Every structure is written in structure tokens, then in C-alpha cells.
Image 1 (cartoon, rainbow, N blue to C red):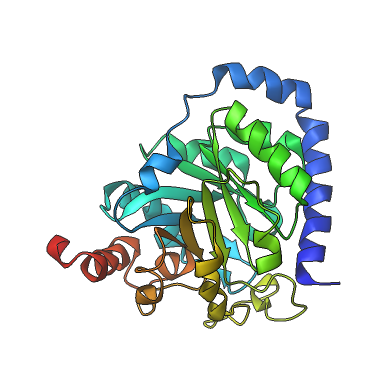
Image 2 (image 1 turned 90 degrees about the vertical axis):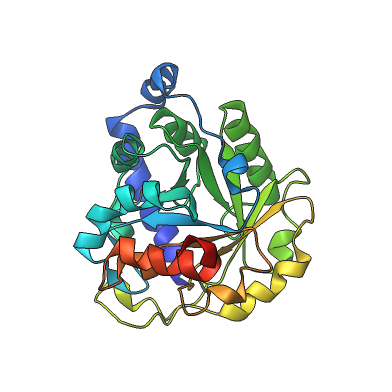
Length: 274
């Protein structure tokens, strides 16, 4: 069993509990009161920028720095290089919930991506009901039919989708009209490297940054996002080849705080801002 297999098994168990507590009918009723969607795609157009993440911990390295997590919404809202936010909504592996997404949304004006392991249409509607502007759709989790079906539903609800790939085979599964595609350097199908699931580590052993070399294979009519393993030290690897980078751990673990970390990104990506 790969680490991804274990995560998906746990996600489905957590989802069953959620559905028992909040039915599909409840979620559909909530949609009528959901805040209007913000334009995730438009936020990423133009110059290279960041999708900045909020999570309490990660299975790759363990807990984030609590001070940084608390500081993150305000820091992301203020930063000129942060175009959108990514909020994890998985409790077991990331210490977060869908309710946290609503709380973060109330504090920012930028679009928010619900980042989770989406395996059921229920989660797509739930994302919009709680205020998400976009969802993550993973091509190593969903087959081509469900990638397209979940995307159609997301757009029907006014959301965008970030499609995530790791291989050329996964790229070939994407809908023709996918408008935002990300390459994730994390090796989810490995059986090792996720030391943060049970402890804490200063080093991330679950990455393969060579995966970003697939950039030339991505659909040319889509915005391109680099995901995972990026920091101020290596942002130059992707800033010329991608439209945005999704970054969380390096900001949320920076010993100098989230704002100071973002200031370093601002200086590196646009010296005129420093």
C-alpha cells in the first residue's frame, strides 16, 4: 500500500462521518447562502505570484509553526506577491477542517482554493457551500471521467479547479478545457518519505523536484502552477516556467515569521517591491 492509498482510505472514512453529521441535502440547502465566488483564474493571470497555503501540519514534515499559522491570513492578504490562498480541509493529516476555510475567507479578499483529496461530488458542493472559490482535482486520485465530471460540477457552482499531475500519463487524462494545471513534486505513490505523519522533520524526504521538468508537456492554453517543495532558495527554478507557485511549508515554518518570509519572496520575485 502506498502512502496515497492509506490517505484515501482514511479520507473516505472521514467523509462517511461527515455525511452522517451533515447530509447531502443539508449541503445543497447551504449553497443558497454561500458567498459569491471570487475569480481564482483571474487572480493568477499576469505576473508570476504565489498561492499561499494554510495548514496546521503536514504528513511530510509534521507540525507547522503555530505563530506563522496564526499570522498567515493577514500576511497573505497584505502581500503583493500572494495572488490566492490554499486552505487544507483534511483533519487527520493536516489538522484542518472545512470550517477553517470559512473562517479564513472572512478575513481575506483573495480567492481561496479548497485543498483536499476530492473523491466524491459531495465534497465539491461542500466546498462551495463553505465559501471555496476553487477546488483541487488530483489526476492520481480520479480517473478521466470523474476529473471531467467534478470539473463540470465545480464550474456549474461558480468555482474553478486546479488540476494536479505528476506524470505524462496523468496529463493525458485531463479535460481538454482544463484552465489551470499544476505539477506536484511530491511522491504520493511512494511507501516512504512521509516522516511527518508520526513525527517532525526539518527535511522533506517526499519530494522529487525533477518532476517540474514536465512543464513543457502541460496544456499550453492553461495556467501552470508549481506545487510542493518550493522555498526562497529554489523559487527561481519555477518562476520563469510557471504562472504561479503553491507554497505553504516554507512560509509556515520560517523561524522569522510568515510576513518576513513573504518579504523575502517579494524581494526575490520583484526587486522593485523591496
